[in-house]
Every structure is written in C-alpha cells, then in structure tokens.
Length: 347
Ligand SMILES: [Zn+2]
Image 1: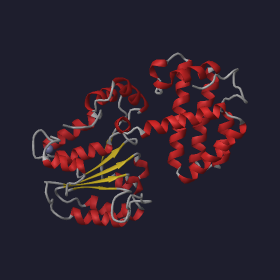
Image 2: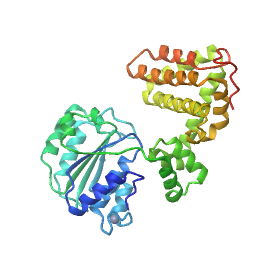
Image 3: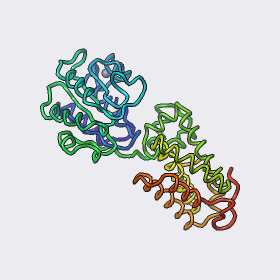
Image 4: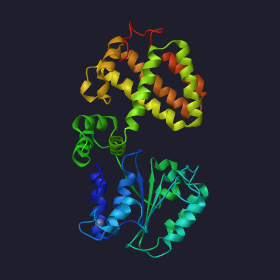
C-alpha cells in the first residue's frame, strides 16, 4: 500500500498513471521539509518494481530492499550521498554525482524493471550539475525515472523545472496525522495528539519524533531557554543574544528552527489570550501559556509575534545577527522590563 500520510490527490494521480502506464520520465516533488517527499518517491519506486499485487505491496523482496535502501536499481542522490562524504554533508550536489548517476541510468535495470533516481534537496545542485542533468532530462532513457525533491521550485533553474512534471505536497490536517500515528505507528493517544499539533501538517516530523525523543528534548530545552530569558536580567538577555548569534554563524538552520519554535509558542500565547485553547500546538504547555497570556494584552502579544517574524526576516537578509537578536531580547517581556503589568513565573 501507499505509505503517504495524506497527499491523496498526488497518490491517486500516480496510481492512475501506473495503471495506464503513462508515468512521466521525471517528477519534481515540491513541499516543506518532512511533508513526505522522500516517502512518496520511495513508494513510487516500489510500485514500479513491485513483484506482487497490488503495487506497491510493501512486502515483496523488491519493496523491502527499496525501503531498506539496498535495491540496486533505486538510488538516492543528495548532500550526504556518494564517495568521500563519510557522514559529512556536502556543500552542494556536484557534477561527479550527476555523472555517476548518468552512467548508471544508461545501464539496463539490474534486478528490477525500472531504474529510479531520487535527487534529494535538488535545490542544492551545483550550476554545473544542473546543466548536465538537463541533457539527461531532455533525452530520457526507457525504464528510467527521475524524481527531484525540493522545498521550493524557485530555488531550481527554470530549465530543470520545465522538464519535470510538478507534484505539490501540502500540509496534512492534524487529525489525519494524529490518526496515522495512533493506528500505524501505535503512538499513545495523548502523545499522538501533541506530535500531530506540533508537526504543522508535516507527518515526517511527527513520525520521527514518535520514535526518537531527541526532537522533543531539543524542543523542551529551547522552550526552557525562552522562559529563562523572560525571567532573566538584561545581562542574561545579552549573553543569550551573543550565544544565538554564534549559533547563527555556525548553523543558520538551527537558529531559524529556534525562532520558529518561539514563534509557535507566542502564537499559542495569543490563541490562549483569545480563548482558543483547542487549536494550540504546544498542548503540554497550557499552564505556562495561560500564565503568560494573563500578563499581556492581545496587542502586546501580537507585537511580540511580529518582532520574532521581523528578526527572522532580517537575519535572512543578512542583517547584523547579534544586533537583531539583542533587539529581539529586549522586546521580549520580563521581570526587568514588564510589559502590561506583572509577568507570571514560568512553569
Ligand atoms: Zn512489492
């Protein structure tokens, strides 16, 4: 069966194309991180090479090998694949990786009926690699399927985009993610509800978080940092701004992740202040959210949410990171800088 959580429209389209044997030779799967692009691509590779019915059965030798990443005809090309990476990420998908792929694509399938090449993070193709890939996409071999996965087609050359059929993956409603976690991954009900709410419609995040506590531990640590800032002195805030600026310089994605988490948190404070508790994401933080909502007016909370959004945008536009973060720190409410009266102690 198809493993995708949600994405019924795309799955139905691919199923029809499989039945009518009219699949495109190249697909561009577009959607936010953890939405299920890789799961869908591997599923399609399984469906094409499946030895049983209905495709993809998920149980035959071919389906299992593809799921395990050991099928000779299904290859994932990305920042962490290829010789010499040894667990490190490449800066870009290079020409040598595309040349290796082109050589493999020119050979007949080894153990299945189709060779499938999945380019993960296609926005990371170097210019040279993208140009070389163009020729392959223009002159497709029979029994070869390419799938390019990306968060945004705008990050890819238009020439590459125009040679692929685009499939867009959209966020999945929280109740659907929750039901999938409970039924297919046997996650306890309350945890399934929390993970579905925190996933923002991206089932991959929730599925990973269900089996790997690290994601929730990181979230807890970053919320603690936020609450420590709210309770901290100006010196504490400036020290935190410096720490976060250093983090930004080392790994931009990590800082964006922290700001997104804070944004979620303050968005929830706003929802609680408007008496919309049922739709908050941080369901396990209701007491803290309520305490903060009681000390601030809706207008002040809205201004805080905008402040975090503005900081994120400024950082993306290469503003001075430490300065932007110091301004954000001073905008956050706290004991030394009360906003709208007393700030309750964080739980
Ligand atoms: Zn199968």
